[in-house]
Length: 313
Image 1 (cartoon, one colour):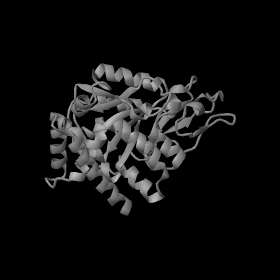
Image 2 (cartoon, one colour; image 1 turned 90 degrees about the vertical axis):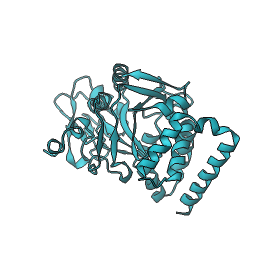
Image 3 (cartoon, rainbow, N blue to C red; image 1 turned 120 degrees about the vertical axis):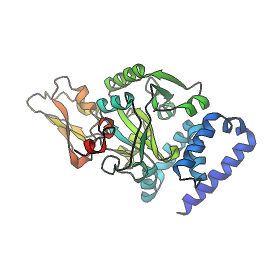
Image 4 (tube, rainbow, N blue to C red; image 1 turned 135 degrees about the vertical axis):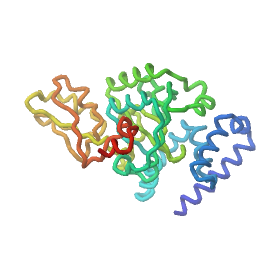
């Protein structure tokens, strides 16, 4: 725990220095004040100054923050890696469920979500309906020397004023239709939709990231370092052997290295996160996603938004 305490102290000192050397203007922005008020409300009026400062540092310098995390987090000891994953993590979304979040037309606040989001700091899901989305340049792609294109693929949903005010050159607002078109394009490229939650954002839903296996720090941490950064969608890929021709396209595309093709495609259940990338890349339609409750439950806002009695039916 000593390293956590020293890190918190360093955060406070850093924030103080930043204030003294020129952050006054940014801290005075309307979106900054609103973000601090939201964190106070979420903390029940207790303030949680460190969380608010962490949120400010993350939102103000996401590119430097993520680049630092991609270098430092893999070197942490085991328990520290889990601590990190509990505070910065995602839930895989098949494309249809990602579309449903973009199309959301009413606010949602639910707290009984242990089987949907199995991280203790993300069970209070607050989703705010919004007619548009803010796109931010992906910090993971930004950190790579030759990133996948396009780079503005992180979707801040139900808000985004802080992002627009602090990163005017790397973010812009899009309509729902434009956001849906980007989701489809990323799906066709074989990228993973992930609903990300961050304690820096008040333990709430933050964004839909469109993750590629070559750039994404979260996917890399999971597949290469064993850090449980993302939870399964609640689905698993299933192969219909009669239709499979053994071409290997699914294995090449799978971001979680869950598919092998000795002669026909085979899915390793433990590795499969139910993203649907293999399904989309299969020319013979031999792969489909099926619900598997052993993987948890899907993050389906169409169910979450229903009345309680319907959601439990």
